[in-house]
Amino acid sequence: MDLPEPVRSVLAVLPSLRTVVVGAVVSLGVVAMLVTVLVATGVLAQPTVESIDTQWGDVTNETTQIETQARVDNPNPIGTPDVVTIEYTASLNDVVLVDGERAGIGLSPGENTVEFAAPMDNDRIADWWVTHVNGDERSTLTIEPKASGPGVSQSLPEQTSTVATDLLSSFESAEEEAVTVDGEPLLVLGDRNASWGEATDETTPLTLNAELDNAHDRPVTLSGVEYVVTMNNVTLGEGTTADGVDLSPGESGTLTVDTALETDAFADWWPTHVRNDETSRMRVTLYGLVERNGEQVRVPVRLYQQRLEFETDLLGDDGTNTEALSSSRDSLTAPVVRDTDRDWGTITDETTEVHADVTVDNPTADPAINDFVRLTTTTETSISGVDVGSGSRETTLSAGTNDLRVTTELDNGEVPTWWARHLNRGETSQTVTTTTTTADVGFTTVNVPTPDANATTETDLLADLNTDESQPVGTSDREYLLAESTTATWGEATPQVAPLDVQSTLRNQRQRASITIQEVSYDVSIGGVTLANGSQPDGTTIEPGEREVVDLTIGLDNSRMDEWWVSHVRNGERSTLSVDAWATIEAAGQTETVPLSMFATNGTVETDLLG
Image: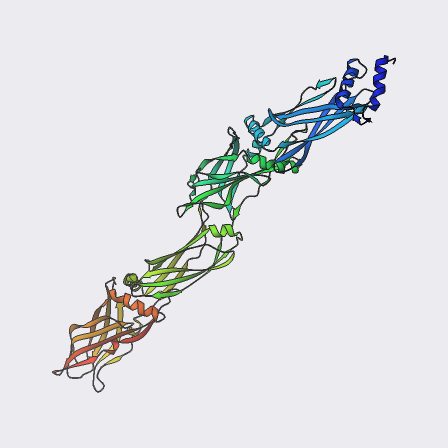
């Protein structure tokens, strides 16, 4: 090209513009002026910014570097001195993430790659998040590039792309999930969904809904809910609500939990997201709250949990992706009662303790659950169908084998009642200890099968009084009568009186004189407690060689059997029954008192009421 002389002169000067001339440096201002002239005269063509690419750079807890790579085309055969400036603005939903600029750029002929970085305040992500949520999880990324310099001023068309996430879709599910005990469902979660509220600079509301069904045979109750929301283990929100649950067996209802995420926390989450190639895992966990001792306590079993993973490409065009992740379900394991041994405890005049030593195997190793779950064992004891006492023990369990003692306190005052039934039932009693064990898991209780204890006790207090053996009646030197047979039976006993009917067939051994039984006296005691002491007029006259039946009815004071009971148990359930009787007889004008051996016994009474 045939250049004008002035132009050739200027071009000839350019190579020397970057050198020091006699102690002076040619200023960039002069160079810029010259370049302007060249561009204005058409000698030099304007460089053009072909594209700007951005990506995330180094990230700290406060800032994230945005690295920029600008591709600039210089169509001139010569380079451009360091007078070009490239700048751009990157925004998400009008929230300016960064204003990037690099000045003093020199361009070689042809294509040039210019790289520079600018820091973004991470708080800008929290500002963007508000607009993103309020815009139905849709955002627009806008990059506005511009190049300027002497004779150069060019704004490229805006580069825009859409950023869309769909976090809420992962919360939508109709698949049933259940909180179980030993695989049996207690509380079943049905349809679930979530929705955002109006986000602000302070909070981002997230509402969770779940259909609940009480599949248990006992009520399910929660006084509130505690929630925890995290992204990449950064807590975005946690708190409690008064959203309660009160479902009868078989009843269904809807649980609505209004959570509040801290908008500022998204700035803390952001560095983890960038370091993980813009990938995050979100976890939403709900725990039930129950009231214990006037305080709200968290049930250490997850009521609900949702996990999801999402990827973004905020500065690129690769789009976003959200995927629901599987979530393990909590299942409680009920303890198992292995053995129960019983023995007597402390005995007083009023009460008698029964110790039930229970062996419980607890397969749960989690100390948080073991410290929370309450095991309650209640015993109710009856003898001959009479309720005699109860006891209860509430405790927590450690992992493995646990030895528990439950003490039942029997009311000694009930002894006369059940003893009367014992006599009326042929001297047979059944001791039944019904044991009920429940595990309080917070929102409901679970039955823990526990075997009942049954023991049958039989006595034969009258064995020695029923006999067909002949027994003489008289003194050591004189025999008056011969008891040929004796029978003894109980009448209908009450808690006050136990009638004892004794009959004996007596034959007059005298050959010439009749014998009259004027009175029969008696003394009956058991375990040292006197039940009867008195006499009964008779008047039976037996002629020589004849037989007559003598009938003795003794009303035993059954109300004193509680006194007997104390000594009986203290003596290892062994007592002595003592029955003595005497007859005042008249024979040949003489009166004499003689023992009635057929009406006497001194036997041992043994029981085993606890089996």
